Structure formats: structure tokens, C-alpha cells
Length: 297
Image 1 (cartoon, rainbow, N blue to C red):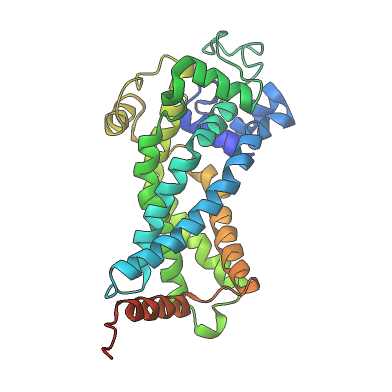
Image 2: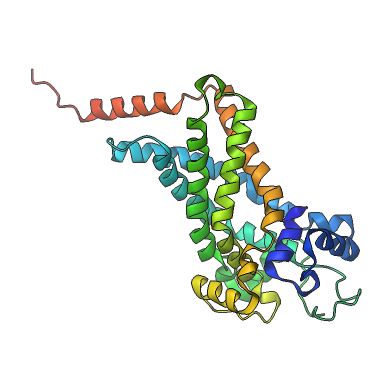
């Protein structure tokens, strides 16, 4: 629900300018009713399952590869920062078209013209669903169209994903040993990780959303690069626009990251996955045994 309100705020639709959180909720309800709060949710669900799976799997694999490639690397939050950053980029590349579709479906507002928004264009594309959105984008712009705005996504996900894992592991390291398996402690660490990571990287997320929906309007960002678009937004809309919708995003990201990390850690315990320390020792022992010289007979 807050996703659709956030996209409207970040992309600066005319009917949402200056509306604020309550005003944006009211506008969506007036134009589309309750279903409008869940527009694009199908694409969001279809994306988040493979995204989360790839993200956490790649994180563990990259972490293991880094330990194998650099046995002397310190195993701490910095290692999590590196592995998390690369894992985030991997997950984004593999699932980006669904992220684009999710944004476009959330951005469109049916019936906006009929209730008198003077700046809304009658010719705006209204997609019928996920497959219609995919076919339309591909027909108009080819594969390139399905990856519009991916550059700022990668620029943003590398620091965001890395910082998210970094802050989570850093916060956990300050929790007393006897409380590290507590659900409340994990939720607290995850909340702080999501809050700090999202705040630091949010401006790039704004650029990404505006680039994703630029085809809907006569946007001045058309054909511009990520950093050029960043400067253009500041010049035309003010620096505050780079943080537009951040408070709404907190409502989604903070609990999402907290629950994600908590479920992730809990599932590893439930599935009896060896701890990182045990895995690291096993990996290094195996690597050393494979490289050890064979004694002559």
C-alpha cells in the first residue's frame, strides 16, 4: 500500500505534488478506491521471491568465495559489506525487469483525468496487467526498455545492500552473546540496518524511479545519465525532492528489512545450517588439505 503512495511522491506526479502522506492516500482512494493501493502488487510479489532468494544465496556464496580467495581477510562486518554489495547487484540484474514493471503499474492512476487533474495527460498508457506491461514495453523499446533505469539501481543497491548487511552484523556484534538468538534483538538490529542503509542511499532510489517512469511524461530526464539526472532533479525540483517520500519508505523498508533478517537467521537455525564460523573453518580446512603437498612414498 505505502509502495504506491511512495512511487507517486518520488516520481512527482502532478496530482500528488504537495499532497503529503495523508493527501496521497486520499488521492489514490478517490481515483481508484481500495484496489489502487495494491496496484502493481502482483509484480512486486513475483519479483520479491526470486530477488530475496538470490540475494541471500549470493551473499553466502560470495562471502565463502572471498574467504577462499583471501584467507587472511578479517571475518567481520567489512566482509559482510563486500559480500552484501556484490550479492545485491547480482539480485538486481536478474530481477530488474519485474522491478520496472512494478513501478509502472504502481505509477499509473486510472481515472485521474475524470476527476479533474488539469496536468494529467489523457494519452497516458494504462497497462492491463503484468504481461501486458511486458509486451508493451518490449514492443516499444525492446530489451533495452525492460532495463531502463538499471544503472542508478546498481549504483544504489551496491552501497544499500552492503550497508544493510554491514549494519546488521555490526549491531549484532554489540548484542550480548546470550541474547543474540532472541527475536526482539534480531528485529532491533534489522530495523537499524534498514533505517541507516535506506537513508544513505535514498536519493539514488528517487533518480531510479523517475527514470523508470519518464516515458509517461515529457520528462527532462529522458536520455540523461544517472548523475546528470541527479543534478537535473536538484535544479528543477530542489534538493528536497531527493528525499521525497523517505518517511513513507521507512514504513515499508524498516520492518521489511527487520523481518527479512530475522526470518533469514531463524530459518538457518530451523534448517540446521552450520554457523558462519563453522562453515569458514570447514572451508579453510578443506582448501588447505587440497593444496597440501602429497608426501612422497
